[in-house]
Length: 395
Ligand code: ASP
Ligand code: ASP
Figure 1 (cartoon, protein in one colour):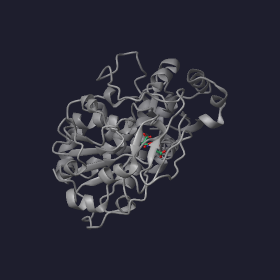
Figure 2 (cartoon, rainbow, N blue to C red):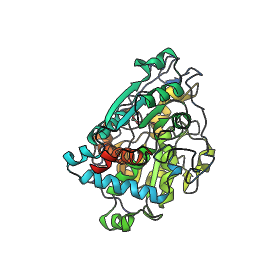
Figure 3 (cartoon, rainbow, N blue to C red):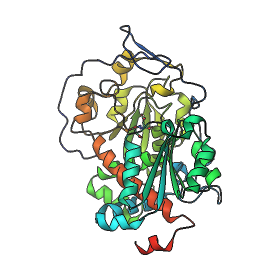
Figure 4 (tube, protein in one colour):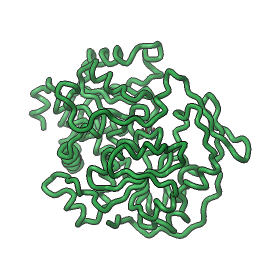
């Protein structure tokens, strides 16, 4: 199935390979030899597992295990849930801002961030504010977390202060489960270690759907729901540091359930063979150009140097084989759309020309992120057992 894009990609020559990073224990890149190595070590106390973990259960979470408004893993969503989140997103998008601001007026949302973030944090925060909610941001470096307070105690404190929902980003895979169990609140996972980033997968899905030809789009959304053939004929190639990527993982768990084919592409050190076991519909292709030829969507990932924990990457070789530049895109996938969850490292995984070029849907992803996050917040607050009457009257 073709994916529409704004204008044709122009033929261009590859950009000069300028990325040279050599890591050190502190995680700050610096240039060194002509065959640079990226070798970083992170403290064992913050290092997530250096493996792809396979989830223990798929499908709806057993009753009572988590608050029903939580969004921790895409594998917990039924297709009906996905359809209703997309539907709610479109409804909120179309709503006049003044009406939207009454919808969850004065509800309390906490953002708890143990890792840095630009897009996810800002878009969750602005999404909550645009729904009228009050927000409080707690970040690891400016709170008692720095003094050693545990995740559990921080969560209980936020709940005592009236938080009705917590948005959590944490370097350890599985941290949202701990917070969910210890607070009983709906938890929105804004990225946990190498595990999942469900709001990113949903915003990627919304971006891809927006690029389907109109006929395919209406089939995908027929009866206000999304079916298991919504992305039939669409091949999404995810390229780069799959091993550490919660974005790759959430997308690979979600998109094949809607009929998409997902190809993981990257060197063995960042993409172990076992990654294909993540689920049906996921394949591995080491040759980037061969993968590109089959792709309607190319999702480029950053090398997560903060999680490499001793792995060594020959960056020059990596760029040679896996950088997306205009020449490569125009030759092998001129009609594909290019996605990237950010932060984009220009000159490493993609060139600036690609990031700013006609195939890029990177800015659109950020837009869809704010809409999807409104819908996830609404779902979390609506499912709250103590929802107050006033806020539901305002809807
Ligand atoms: N890590 C990226 C950022 O900091 C995107 C995200 O927050 O998920 O912008
Ligand atoms: N923004 C994404 C994340 O938080 C990807 C990245 O950081 O490279 O997982």
